[in-house]
Image 1: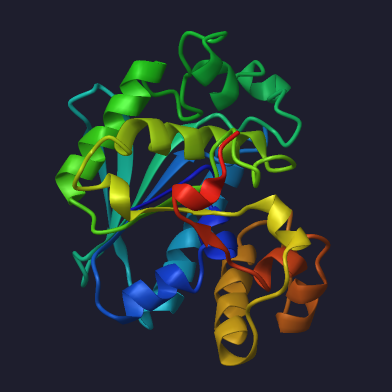
Image 2: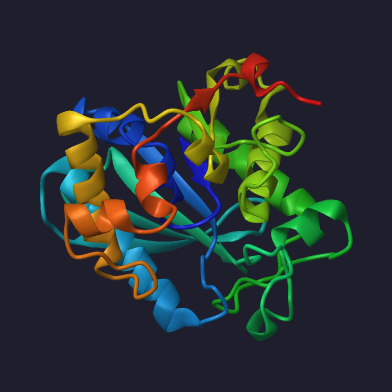
Length: 264
């Protein structure tokens, strides 16, 4: 199971781990907590979601249609689930909560609602950008636990949480989701030991650790995604690697265990 703030966090920060798991035929369930809407509305959200599906098709080496199902979890949270018609071992789930903005202040279009405010208790609930039922903090934590119970993951991948030495400078949504997963699942004896936290924006300050065919494959997956994202579109490998910040993040992937988080 992998849990991320925005569509594209998975392929930027956690590949090749995810692509390797897909190539090995493992069951992979990816959850996106926010819509990554950037205050731009549902057309932009749908474009990013389509980009993710095409990126996952590339990782599994097959083009094909995906079945869409709208699910109401026992917590009351509504989730949109996409699964390839020919592969039940893979699914992508969207909660579509509001993007909190890199500033942490949210956007006018979503009344400046953010995950950070929800988690800090200054916002009682968040309304998904698709107009679904409002979600409270307790419902969100419960939903992560419910999904983990359903998926019984051997490993869980997510962002660096708040309080880690690797958190300063990261996107506030990343830190909130990492904290959400850590709070929800570390006490689960079956799931907690398998959690790995991936360094986000601050990874650019760490040595490059991807190259050759592994990097080429990662960049191509990212490039396929970007064809649907008008903000970060890049035409080829060279252009993707020259994209400010993103080019550096793509050349790195650092996973941390609970002990390695160095929580303050």
